[in-house]
Length: 143
Image 1 (tube, rainbow, N blue to C red):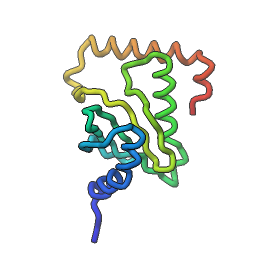
Image 2: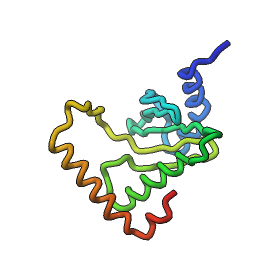
Image 3: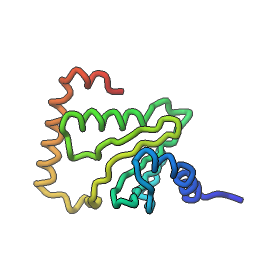
Image 4: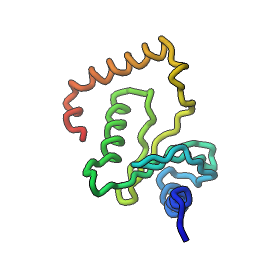
């Protein structure tokens, strides 16, 4: 029997359900797949207490030695610790099981034709904040 990528991802969630619940401190009421990519699968978890999280499962690639999970998590953690709040808050990283948990941010994907001057100004402000943070000593320790 062949197992589709969707079925395989569903099994990953089922296999890690208890661990995920323990880490976030609540039972998971529902799971919704957000995205599948070549390097990861992303899900929204809704807990029994209505709190939402995002869990991202990273797929190690033997030919690619980059630690994508650690890079992403530690970078977001660095930004969060320096008061950048337009990003998801990193909650936990589980290296053995290759997933990270982030706070959920409500929103919708912005289509190219919907981008306006206000969006560009916001993006420029974000880039300025990133530029200022590069002088922090801790930024040199990021992977």
